[in-house]
Image (cartoon, rainbow, N blue to C red; front, side, top):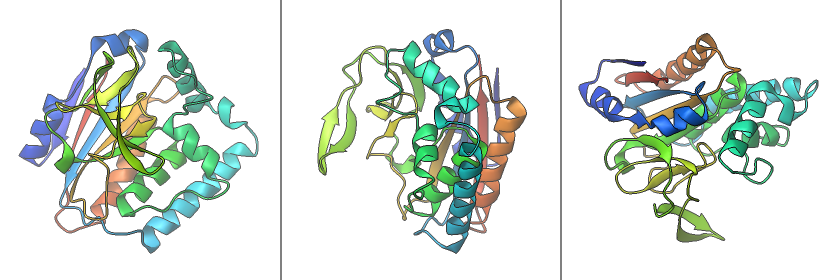
Length: 242
């Protein structure tokens, strides 16, 4: 099932070309990708609004972890299982939701307004969320299992390097290479959000413990905050399921 909505033709066209390979759905039939494309945002550095949302997210994480170990939080546990299903080690490479939830006690990172907003929404709603600068994309966004020769532009010890995913690894990619490794573990440099970003893609990754209603509420929360970043913000969304 696919649903596309929005009021910006260019955004709808980009989302309409996005895809999730059947091999991914065979791995996790309960997987859903909710994509949000926006333009006209005034990104900028972290500010009082993003700070307040991050503080709230830290409080939410603290309350969750007061009663439940992080690895046993329902959606985090499901993503750990999904990682094991395609050969990754969830204790070594943690999904983005788990990584952020673990960091919350010591303080979530303050990066820039766009990154702060989606990181906070991710923790508050307990769903992995990725953010990409659309200006860095070349072709459609696609989620598939890697061959192993794809290029991933990242850093190691502060230096720019090109890595390659493992064969069978689940990756987001475009025509040039991998934009995010291990489904939702690490994003590449080429499409990273900055304080100068004006067009962006946000990817919500949901598994079975999260209902469609909860997924929609998380996305709506982010959109509400994004619309506060400019008078001419335009938004399009698409839900992709099996």
